[in-house]
Image (cartoon, rainbow, N blue to C red; front, side, top):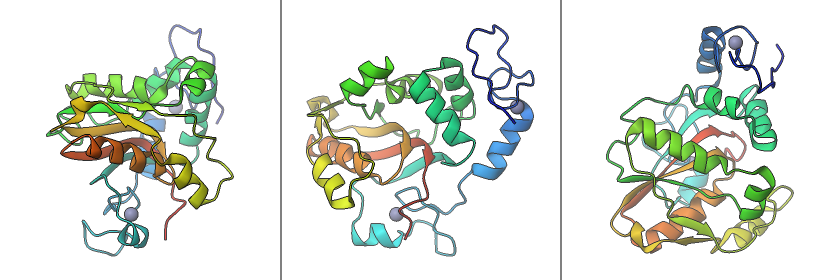
Length: 231
Ligand SMILES: [Zn+2]
Ligand SMILES: [Zn+2]
């Protein structure tokens, strides 16, 4: 298996195996679906809770329930999805975006009752560095295919430091009040869109901001969920 990262080919071959397929070929699609789909039931935080009744919380969420009421995750964050996402984030290959999103659930989407989809914004410095904000691009794409309006209701208050290498307490302190929500969140059921959920800290902080602004309910959609943080 190798990665074809050449963006200039007009007939894009499969991103994972270079067979023809435009984004992802049928074989790679089947492989991803079979090996990286998270097994249900899932906790509110998106982690599998094997052996327990549906709709029950994992140990971590029992101790500290998330403010959002569900997490929809397309895949487990693992090879090769991790490589695809990193290549996309750091090198901005937009044909990878097509490949990554080509398996997202079709209309009406995971939460048809949502009033809108809202990207969880990257910090402007990172956006400037990359030249794009992946959550915003995902939200636009998904809103279109789910036929739900895309309303960017959040912005970052200040530079949150890179989260890697920080303790959980430092992360939480860092993230507290990290987001400002637009008053238009009032009375809305908001589906937050992000690329990867790791600790769920950003999703918690963003959801708090939206709920404080009067949102009725917040759920989260991520392309991939890491299994670290599982209790
Ligand atoms: Zn392939
Ligand atoms: Zn949980």
